[in-house]
Image (cartoon, rainbow, N blue to C red; front, side):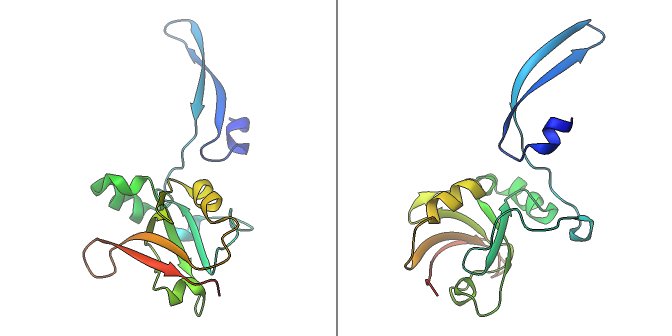
Length: 150
């Protein structure tokens, strides 16, 4: 368990499984996921996993229970990133990105997790096109936004 605790989501780890009823041991490679956090107050972290991007903090789409409940209804959101927060007067706020939006594409390319999002925006200095799924209007809608550089 210690090795799994040190590895992050999407990491591939080797596990040994012992089945006492069958008296045998199995070796398997598994890909770790991320279980949703029920309450923000229960999260103990000294820093965010990823540095904010243009004033936005983000996480796996299944990282928060509210979002997890949403993606159970709309399965395609599982392969997106969740906007955790948007700093006031930031480029992402000016682009009308909101907390709990889901980013599904960067410049037309699908992003399924935070690592893919960071790879897609790395080195982009100018305005960046994002495809966003949002419930801000009271019903889910997909929209395209342009996040300015500054």
